[in-house]
Length: 188
Image 1 (spheres, rainbow, N blue to C red):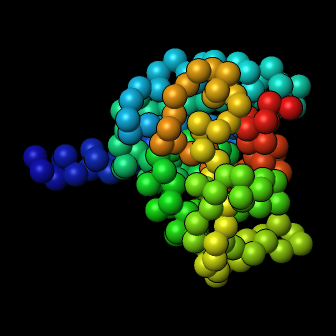
Image 2: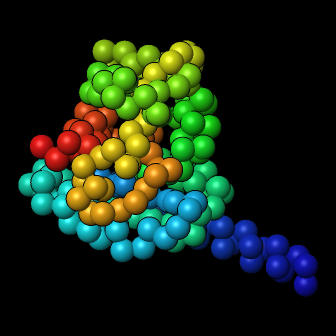
C-alpha cells in the first residue's frame, strides 16, 4: 500500500508540473499586499480600480492580498517572482532589502523625503542588456516608500502606519514599476 501511495504522489506531482507547461505568460502588472496589524480586505479593489483608470490603456493592473499575515506566504510571493510591486510591513521590507531583494529608488524619489525607507541593503548592477549581476553590493539606499506618506492611500483613507511599498528585483519592468509607484505616491 505504501508503494502505491508513493506512485500516486509521483503521478500527482508530474501532473502539476505538466499543467504549468505551455501556458501563456501573464501580462498583468501585479501588486501583492500583506499587513501584520489588521485587515486589508476591500482596499485591493479600490486600489486596483484607481490604478487601472490611470494605466489601463497600457497594461492590466492586478492587486492581490493575503487576508492573514504569514511570513511563509510572503516568502512564497518572493520565490514565485510574479509581483511587480509589493506592500508589506516595515520589518519584512528591511529584512528582504538587506538580502538584495528590492530595487533602489533614489533615481525616482528623494531619500530625505522618505527617510524611513532608506537603509543599508543589497543591490545588483544592471548591465546595458538589462541583465542583473550575480554579486550583491551592500550600501545605503532608498528601498521603500511608507504607505502613510502615499497620496493614493491617503485618498483611500487607509491607515497604514507600518506598511511600505517596494519593488522586488524580479519585477517584469523596472521603469513601469517605478512609474506606478510614483503615481501612487504623488497622484500625478
